[in-house]
Every structure is written in C-alpha cells, then in structure tokens.
Amino acid sequence: MLSKKIEEALNGQVATEAMSSQAYLAMASWAENQGLSGTAAFLYRHSDEERLHMLKLIKFINERGGHAVVSALKQPGTNYKTITDIFKALLDHETRVTHEINKVVDLCLKEKDYTTHNFMQWYVGEQIEEEALARTLIDKLNLIGNDKGGLYLFDRDLEVMTSAPAQDKAR
Ligand code: FEO
Image (tube, rainbow, N blue to C red; front, side, top):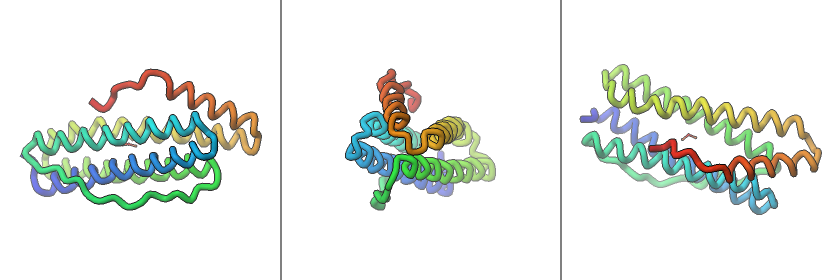
C-alpha cells in the first residue's frame, strides 16, 4: 500500500511524463513543418515513449492501492528557431525530469518504501540514457554548424535510428 506522500509524488511524476510527451509532440510537429522528416520521426517516437512512461506509473500506482490522477497540461513551448534549439530544450527538459525522479527516489528512502524505490530504478536508468543521447545529438549539431549537407545527413541518421525496431523498454 502506498503512503499518501508517495502517491502524491508518483502522481506528480505522471504529470511530468505527460508533459514530456506533449513537449516532444510539439517539437515533432515543428520539425515536420521544417521538412526535417527524420527528426520529426525521432521526436514522435520519443513522445510515444514518454506516454508509455506515464502509463507504467499509472498502472503501478493503481496496483499498489493508490489512485492515479490524470491532470491538465500546460501548452508546451513552440518558439523554436533552429533544430539545435529543439535538442537543447529537450536536454533541459530531461535534466529537470531527472531532478524530479531523484526527488521521488529520495522520498522513497525517507518513507522506507523499498518497493517503490525498486520500481523507480527503471526511471533512473532511463534518464541516464536519454540525457546521454540528447548530449550526443547536440554535440553532432555543434559540429555541423550551418552546413546544410551535414544537417541533411543528421536528419537522415535520425530517420534510420527511428526506423530500427523500437525496444519495448517501458514494460
Ligand atoms: Fe520519461 Fe524522458 O523520460
């Protein structure tokens, strides 16, 4: 059975994952309108993955005797000028998410809820991967600079990466 404090913290994380999904959906739409089809495909898939992260939390909360809450979402930012802006915003967002996850993990230890602590380790690992990937993509974009040929190849690489079979990591 979840304590009220843990239930609230997990519901906060449900909202955070939903906001991540919305934010990446907005970024995907921006990229699609710029003709960056590989980047758009990557971001649409990332948005879907965030929705799975949210669902995993909802199911866990309900299975452990809590009540998962689906809350209202703010409209995500859409004011991007370049593809580099997108990936910097993505990294900023993920860094904030990592901070939120660490707070939940910290609370689990304080409340001696080792079951939820164990469950949250999946999110800790996921954050390491997501931040590393965002940093790698930003490094590549910095190398490319204003080279249109380089940008074309970057976008094509993301298309290839995204069309590889998705790992069903969220279950
Ligand atoms: Fe749900 Fe971007 O981690």
